[in-house]
Picture 1 (cartoon, helix red, strand yellow):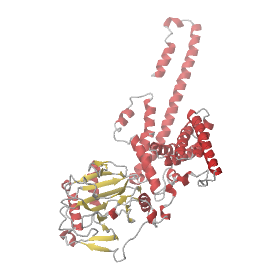
Picture 2 (picture 1 turned 90 degrees about the horizontal axis):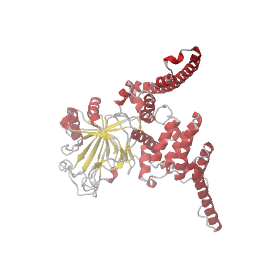
Picture 3 (picture 1 turned 90 degrees about the vertical axis):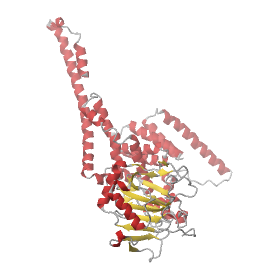
Picture 4 (picture 1 turned 60 degrees about the vertical axis):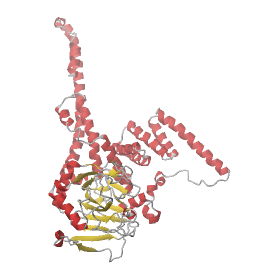
Length: 545
């Protein structure tokens, strides 16, 4: 339409009586030639758009076909999960923008508009990027390994592009995580050099990199990055200003060191040039230090990795054993439960093969429509709220919703010997890319007076955690106070008491759900409360019994 309007404008001045003589038609020949040239230019421009769309379509078709062939396997790799979310927000948006340029009302635009509310958003892209950073820290993954799609414990997948590395770096930057921002901006820049990216894109990366490097306290390195930026654009105002500032700060530090040296103060013996990586506490391997020297975060991450120096086996050989349990429950007399003691203090048990595939699928199907981001109970107010340390989606199932849920609840009662009358509903949880639940207690401590107040059933006396899937890598349940580690085993469950018989909380039960490195983790848990257990688990006068 735009082209036709232009062409008509060029000939609109002509009237029927103007071209009666051939000499007057000569000018029309040149007009027509100009019109042909403009038509060809228009066609060439449209062909370039189509070629670009074809390139995008070819890439999207390739990755889509790979994903459709085996969706579970595809999504079980964290890099693939990130790339899928990223494509919806960037690649498909680019397609839409191209199509909207000239034809804003095509059927394609109408069709994709119906997906707007269900496809991943910009917040999801940032969340997926932060999840990769979480995995990088916990499992000590190098930036290059992640960007090349070669993560230990998983299979190789498509490498990240420079632009995708930049997005991860920018997500870290937006969280004021300048350590990771530096790592990923460096990776993005290296890939840009190989991809022969435009100077404009390089300048953007170097701008982020310079600031994050400065925020890491490395002024000399920030200066070097800024100088590299100015080689590409010597009129970059912020870079020129930053260079002057860095020069002043470096000269100031040098002068202060010289003055101290003259005064004979040799306390400051730091090297002038320090590798960024060496500044990072995450590079000090927790396994190289004794257990007592590790803080909880280090213990948590070391246990998640399964570092041999921190994973403990506690208990005498005769105490760590396997046996069949029936608790004289009629339903278990003919099919007792396979029980394994994996740790003695606190007593941690596996109950093996206590849920079958059909039950797992029914519970998952009931939970799927209800899944929402998991919450925690505020220890002061008792109100449910979101927390950054719990990244998963959960749903709650009542016994009357399905016979399978009722059967599972009855089975828990038979196995534990505790009543389910005052227990919470069955909670079903799905942990996806980087999903975790950082160290916490299941029970409420004395100062948390409002916890479980609305339930009116007392404190959480015990926890039973069903594993409804195997996990390719990561996803362990770890006990950070004692060094115990329980891996997800499909159809099995973990069990422990949160309270001593005296009603006092067992501080050794502090535990965490490690990030899922590869695969997906489905669990369901039952939190069993105190009330109603008086004669099933009698109280004791001794506080630690």
